[in-house]
Length: 104
Image 1 (cartoon, one colour):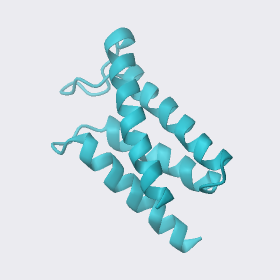
Image 2 (cartoon, helix red, strand yellow):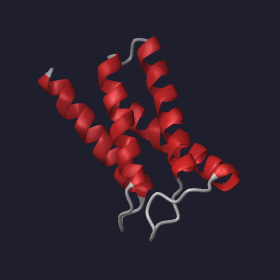
Image 3 (cartoon, one colour):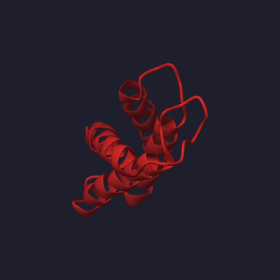
Image 4 (tube, helix red, strand yellow):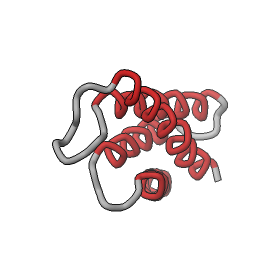
């Protein structure tokens, strides 16, 4: 249950921050055929790490797990793909966190 909160938090908070930072401060495109900027993606990462910190601080999930989930969410969001990142980010980051949680 907490893993789903983490993956949805990465998407909702991270996507909102990526959009805001990308519009206001975005100058460098990550990929030539994409509208995503480096600054917007770093905004996504900062919001995801903040979400991960609070989930760890309130003892919901281990720090290693949410940190890896935030980084995976950042990578999935930054790479251009035909699937909407609002769908792919929580699915992929949640799956990776669930697999790691079961293994360790």
